[in-house]
Length: 184
Image (cartoon, rainbow, N blue to C red):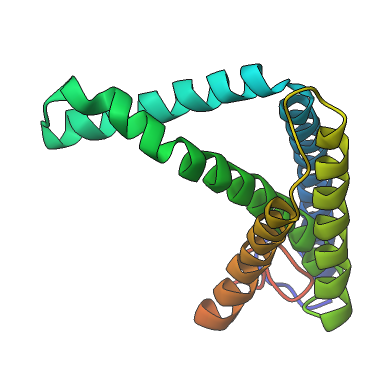
């Protein structure tokens, strides 16, 4: 066996990479399950609860922004009303961006870049978003929105693109792989 570093071999290195891949996979799956729970919990809130949460988050963001730029805080209520819808849609986008990133990162880690993998994750994100909106249809004060499904799916695409752009810019995967790990 070719020695890559004192006391190690190619087999030892592959075993370490395999262990890292398994740890990453389990971690990503746990995060995905947590994300699904968070999304379901937010979707289960009635219209008043959901709006109140959005207003509090928007207000915190506006207060933070005004604090950074030193603007008078007198117009916070107006800004919250103006920006609440944008913050809600940005939250949709970011939740599903995380979903797309985590899901595709696991597929990419084990299978590499593939059109089938990308399509599988896009289908997962789209179906998840559609089921989320279907769930909201039955919640008082909420409604289903195909526009939200599209925003969510766009978020999933962005998550996948992060991984693809990383590969393109740096020429390698940000995740441990069979090829990675050689010492220089």
